[in-house]
Length: 298
Image (tube, rainbow, N blue to C red; front, side, top):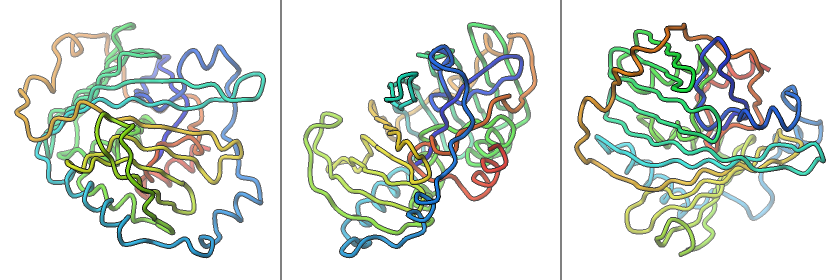
């Protein structure tokens, strides 16, 4: 998974819902450049997993199962609650939380509404246009869109540095994000403490990220993803909680549009003025093209 820590609107709309720094974070301390990996961290990222840690078939079966469940869904909706840490003036991290209501219909419809804690924002994609709206400022950016959700998410990343923390759960092939660079995966056990259901706990790691996942035993749906990043010298933690799952339930077409948003003050899609912090990406690894773009922004 992967996540970015800063969020800003200003004059150019960058709607990185729940993954960019909240306005309150800027009040807490001045913007900082992306942390660079120290030499020990860089070397550690390149090392093979410790003896006894391998890619366990049981863990892979669970990860493939939840990926297949998500990929097969024609429609889905859920609530994504993201808690991420940000350095305080005193040094120890403080936690920020955002929440997004997400709905999609494959292959070409997506809705993401984030009411806060930071500036509220809304995203509508209906297969023809993509529209990003901030209700407080009544600003809207509208552009012609690619024909699929995956391609539209890439457009948003390239144009505005928008990367949703749940991106790798809604693309056509969720398992590809896990398998890319996978170095270790192991089964932890069962838990009844997350998401109001019994879950299987698994962990997996690449050279960049270590993720612990809680996945429903009965329905195969992810309930929590928790990540730390090898190249983040502060080892800040990022958590994505998923709830209110609805799979293959009818979604009205008008849900993916908004006349109020369309009537807002028009601006163009543009990249934010701040730098996207690579060490703070959400728990699943971005596609290579997105990763390359993120590297350029640092």
